Length: 241
Image (cartoon, rainbow, N blue to C red):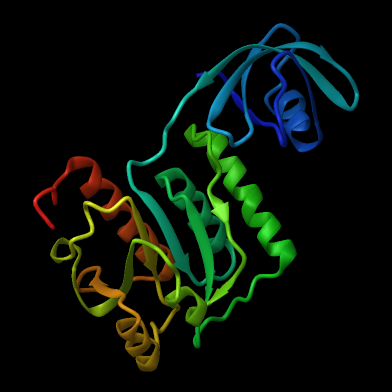
């Protein structure tokens, strides 16, 4: 696979100029030169195979030779809501959710949430998504949504809604496998408050347990994502109704 670079905006079918961070990465980090081939993507689901034609001080000029529709998305659309962890754990969470195919990450604000991300933090998270897509081969960017309070999340109009809590049933007991879209919510350190659990039940959410141990936010988020993705792909629960 040719080295991948992100182009923000519409990609023309012939001539492209790459600037900024991606230009720096191509020329000064990867040390690519004229005549070398790369893959461009902009999040529209396609790969643009291009060749470097010229390198200037502030931009790289490329010719797009071929456009290919390449889907590396999951057969199940997963929306994942979770409080943003502290420090480097936030970057880890976003990168891994992107690699695993989550369609949308929602920074969740609950009674016990600690981090309330602002615009600059969200911009950083979106950059982490791009870097993860460059590495893993996804041609659609995982969406980083605006932070959402639990009450608003509970009212979401999504096909099937799961809330992680030790009091719930194992994932295998839930009839989610025939759904096209699943929204899964992970609580903060210390878990959801009792009244939040009660509100989720009243709103029709299904409680799901993720094992006998208490998981950190990022671990729980990755665990439920992996289970949903694997089980749907392998059709383990194809007889659930």
